[in-house]
Amino acid sequence: MRNFIISIRGGRPLAGDVAVAGAKNAALPELAAVCLASEALELANVPQVEDIRVMVAALRALGAEGQGEDIVLDGPQGRRVRLAMPQLRTPLVSPEVARTTRASVLLLGPMLARCGEARVSMPGGCPIGERKIDFHLLGLERMGAEIRAEGEYLVARCRRLRGIDFTFPGKTVTGTENLLMAAALAEGTTVLRNCAREPEVADLAALLAGMGADIEADGEETWVVRGRAALHGARHRVIPDRIEAGTYLIAGCFAGNDVRVKGVMPAHLGSLLETLAAMGADIQVGAGEFHACGGRALRPAAVVTEPYPGFPTDLQAQLTTLLTQAEGVSRVRETIFNDRFRHVNELKRLGADIEVRGDEALVRGGARLHGAVLRTTDLRASAALVLGGLAASGETRIENAYQLFRGYEDMPGKLQALGAEIAIEEE
Ligand code: EPZ
Image (tube, rainbow, N blue to C red; front, side):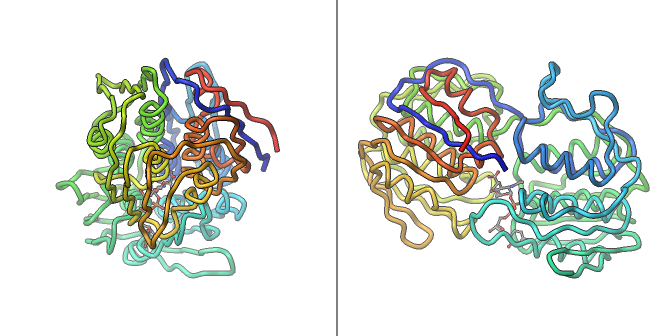
């Protein structure tokens, strides 16, 4: 894996438009849905990020074929991916894929549903704490799958999945998505309760319906799926990436001189908007866009990450960076993952005053940040460190920065267009 160093000369005001790409965490399950039909899926607005490239490569290894300009990640049509799975050539997801992105677990349900077999290397992905998949496996076993570990692989088999009435023991985004896809081809009706409510789940359900699945929501946390014998191809546009949008909105709140974040769905960021408004940030919400200006004194905040519609864990690190610029002491409690404060030590190298006690970080704001050499560990922490570099005076260098490209489409280029002094070089 090529690696990069990002260098930033901070303190520059940011101004202008930044367009948000399609949601990585919607496109990943929607690509996995290619396994469910023999006809082509055409996804528009797919973000050009590493995790997507890895998922597309995994699908091709499973037998997915493109027609013509099948995988057009940089094409004039924007990011369009067109893939079909006439038959599943081999039900094996390689360790290389699984080590790169945890989203490879999303292939388990569709592969079982399509061909009754799946061999998936144990998922890897971000080192942000224990990333269990027991809820996924519990649901699939209840649907009739036999799943066992064979070395580093999970091996799953079933004759045909059957519908169940299943309540998730806890909120899981990819667990909900895995079982929705499995249920689409299962025999009989599946009722899934205590489902994750993230917008990416509803976007996947919309794609499945477009493929002919009989799927409907029953309230906010329950889905009812009547299994079909087969699904057909479909065309779908991926929803905007709310985490990318939130990241640029936060940047605008401390460095903005009218940053306009465009192509967003404000309703997907209610909790962040409430938090920033309570801090006194200068934000205008328009139709499909945010305007943010810095320069205001920001009040501290008390934030707890929660499943949607609560404050998203994927914006916790980025908000922590903003809180170092607020006037007063803020509290950030991370309840979703048990090791998602790895950005804190790096922010402290910039001069931030943060103390982590268990699942809570105490952020003493008002720190004047100064440049430093940092090393990032995971996708959203890398975004938080870039924001820190923008806020710091002098030069900041961020090593191991390939992480950023796993989930952000050309962040250095988008920030340069806003006036940031930022460059990338290969490590
Ligand atoms: C999805 O991960 C996202 N990834 C994550 O985004 C996001 O942080 C997370 O949801 C929470 O919103 C994708 O959608 C590809 P979970 P996922 O299953 O599905 C526990 C990013 O930066 N749990 O909702 O893997 C689990 O340990 C990434 O884009 C179980 O105990 O997360 C965690 O504590 C990072 N058993 C919590 O639930 C299970 O079977 C939430 O996990 C599944 C999960």
